[in-house]
Image 1: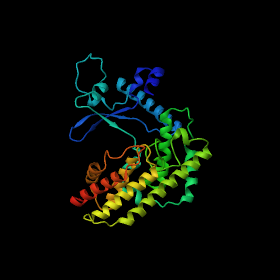
Image 2: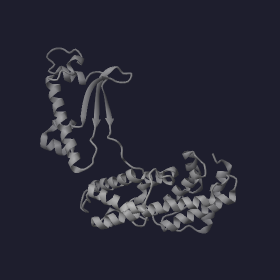
Image 3: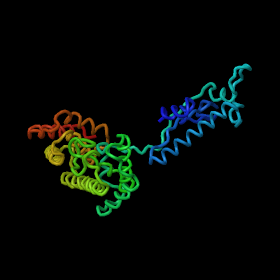
Image 4: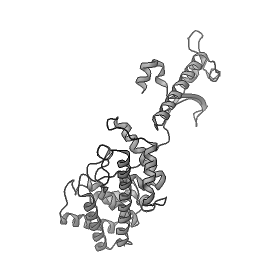
Length: 327
């Protein structure tokens, strides 16, 4: 974008996303504070309007710095030998101690479903009624028109992110998992069969709305299914080795059956086992990661159903480690 602006307007426009003030900053005294802030990307019209406004504001700032017309900066300018050719306002904003702060618009990036906590998924902060899903999805597709299959990948990613954000706004953080598709789809190795990826799952608006709705309901059903499975085993004392072994082996098999042991299925397995540890009362994220790393990591492969002996060994190792140090 900046290259295109420079090509059309000239080199001066390169700073279009900067502003500057003279202010008291933390413990550094009164200094020039430059801020670099790229506008958020939403709809094409809104985004282009924000960029245009930023270009105009940057031009006005350059005029002010060159002429001191605004009078906001000249008083803060350091003394200089006459004849330097530098306007006092420019000397002020380039003065000693200046800093640049890189800010970003409100971060709406959503977590990968594997990074959700069990609390995020087991306790949706908004009620879920499957009968409402299609209307919600229809509204989202109306607000964010489908990009063409030939569109830039960034526009496709933005569209997917907007749909996910809309579903999360309506139903809660757990909804971000609607794209965790089986095999080599958008997020790789998940339990959702209704959705694959943009290239395969996006067709007409009507059919795409049907696909997204089915994917969200399928994802919610999987989370509810896991909750029922967890309830079969919990509460589970740390020293109940047999109970832990049965639970872990059961969950590994359940994940494998759901993901079809496709590409990256073990990532979903690690996530589900981590959720189970959390539900069992192991609160420390670091401790859960250590338990899984030592007991599970590297022992499962894509496209391969592990032998029963390997599943039993993983279950035994995890059970023993929980028993030794459950904290």
